[in-house]
Each structure stands twice: as structure tokens, then as C-alpha cells.
Image (cartoon, rainbow, N blue to C red):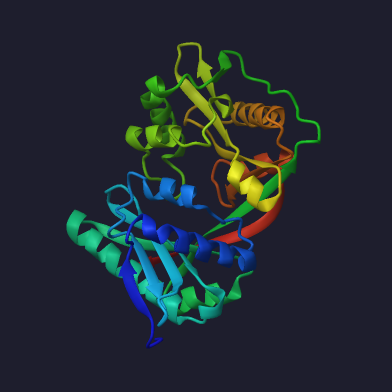
Length: 320
């Protein structure tokens, strides 16, 4: 361990400039599309589930320069509580010491969560498939591979089929916050049997609706004749991310169909509807993240719709 390495808690807004600079310095090397800004960090740190006093950690060198940053996202209480560890280390300080300190901090924090809330806890993180250095650190620290993911892209200059909805279902724009409970119930029923699902709460969903990048015209649902929310496609355009990368991209951020209504073509119809909305918004390329082992066949759906893989990543887990 570096003798000059010191750790401390987040000290509020006065740390934002240094954190943003560190993350963007790492981004220049790593090219993960995970750059940030002070305003984006403020928004993220205001998340309802984040305890900024306990879930953020900073590491500094002997000159008090920020060289490491870690953030933990803790799931809702349940039989198993997951803590997703996101950490960045300055390129000049890499080699295992700061990374190991970040992981050790995450383990201690999750044991605190277990003591306070009861139940088993797991520490989770990820790495790009080609990032051999980070994979080596994670393996040395006792993490095991848990899941594989793909990032896929599709040019919107290519023809987009018109969405075809089964009889009895209609495309609608999500009405808004007054129907948040119905949307959340649909979401949870759509993903309840998927890997590592944790129920979304109405409170968290409303927080998402209040984000600056949220656009109601990109928030689509399929509704049954009786008014039940059945399927959804929410798209997102991050203006600041596009400005940073110089790419004109938008995300299929969330696509799903509730149990009992799958294999009817609703997911495909919602995907095409979302692609049309992104194209109408002036986006050149659609991006989506996919669980490579999704049980409902999401990977095959996106491939058949013209998406191709541009990046692989690996989810890692450790019992603590």
C-alpha cells in the first residue's frame, strides 16, 4: 500500500471540481463514455438511494491531489442486498494499491449495510472485457465473473420498419407523473424474472422523471384495451455526453414487456417506435446495453432489428 495514500469522505460541493477532473482524466485514457461534469455529478449525488456521507470515498496522494474516487449504489432491502461499486483511479496511480483500497472500502461499507438492515450482501462491479489490468485486480481481490453484457449500436439512417401492434394494444406517450404507480408496476412485472432484479419504487421513478435529460416525447408505452400498461420503451438523449464525445447518439434506455404478454411482437413494435422517435429528434445512432444471457431473447431481438455489438463488458460479484 502506498504510504502517502490517504482516504476521506466526500466534503460536499467543494470536491466536485476535483472529482470531475479525475473522472475526465481517466476517460481520456479509458474511453468508456463515462465522462462527466459538475452539474451531472450534483444530479447523481442527489439520488434518493445515495448516502453521500457513507457511499462516496476519495483517496489523495501526499500533495492532497485526488487520485482515486469510489461510489457505492446500494439496492433496496431484501433477501440479498447488492452494492454496485464504481471506482476510478488516476492513470498515473494505477497498479493495484488504490484499486485495492477502493474495493476494501466497498466491502467494509456493505458489511455496515448488512449489520444495519440484515440479510446477505454482495459487492458488485464491472470491467470491459479487454481491460486486463482491472480484471486482474478484481480477480486478485476475490471477485468472480457473474454475467456478460453487450453494448450495441444501430445507424438510424438505415430504414426503420413501422411498428406493428397486435390487435387490442395501442401505442401511447406516457401520460406523466400522475401515472407513475402504473408505470412502476408494469416495469417490475416485466423484469421480476430477470437477472439481479430489484423492484423499482415510485419515489425513485419520480426522481428519474425530474432529471434534465428526461423527455416525455421519448417515453412510450403500449396500453391494452382495458387501460393496463403492458409494454414500454424509454429513450434518452444526453446532450452533455454528445457534446463531450462529438457523437450524435441516443439510447434505448429501457425496453420491456410484462409477463403474460411476451412473444406477441410487442417488444419489437415498441423498439421500432422508439427508434422512430430518436430519429425524429435528430439522432444519428441508437445505442443499447444488453444482458447477453437475457432469458426473453433481447439480444436476438436487437440483432434482428439491425443492431451490432460494439463493446463487451463483464459483471463481477463478491460475497462479503
